[in-house]
Image 1 (cartoon, rainbow, N blue to C red):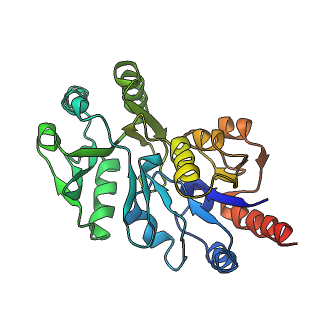
Image 2: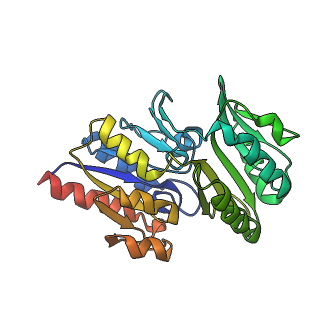
Length: 282
């Protein structure tokens, strides 16, 4: 039985310091060298993934932005793009403006752009400063949300206090649910007290991306083993044959998982991978 292992990053494979531990890095290098099929399915963009997983020879396409992109890890080539319906861009821009929310937009218009508006709170500012420190060439600013209308919107990220984020997610789902997916998560990269709301195409989800990976990239006959911790990982579990939650996972994720392993700070994913791969090798 051939298995393809797919892991979320933050809160699952990474530590609470949003790093890949030495033990996990060395373990993955060893397993990948032995031919273990492994990739990641994450909210992060490829530019954010690569520094975290440097030194890992990932040959299977990675899934980024909660399923909005399937990418070649080595070259950065976009193998599949699931963008937001362009006819809804203006309405979405007006919605955020009326809600006094200041998203960042990841878009394609010839080049990749990561557009930030007003740095209205410490959460947005922290994310923006992190991109500056990373020397992100995609980074740009907008003064009016109407400036970002056009091209392909791959993902929208809103960072704000919990009640504003949850209210916005509810209203977005009510008004635009036929066109978009929303995901509300915590992030260890921003100060406490803030949530992230991500918006993507209704065609973009961790579930659909796995289904595309199986259908279009030669993994139809593989047993999919997925690791996650957040509600946004539940669609990934639905597309998988074996779903595994880490100990620190959200209760809803644990409830629908086939198995619960140790804490992400204790290298639980790599421990499971080593043991399961060893059993297969036998």
